[in-house]
Image (cartoon, rainbow, N blue to C red; front, top):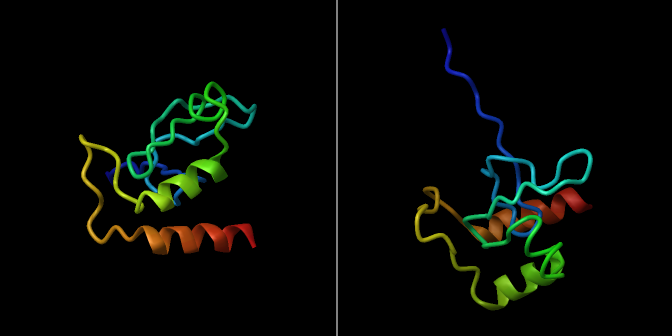
Length: 92
């Protein structure tokens, strides 16, 4: 029996591609997951605090794109510049 593949999702703020849940469901509801890379919490940072993903991204970049999670280590080879470039490529 092969191991079950876990579906992963991408953070629309920083491009981290290992979120456990989609940031938003098809009906628009937030996952409330916190991105370990940039710290954005879907449904709180945006809905409750009124910060757009674009605003959060600009601030995160200005702060040096530091990994925000204290409990989860960055994946080997984590390069935020590459993830941002891939994210921009999806928008094109």
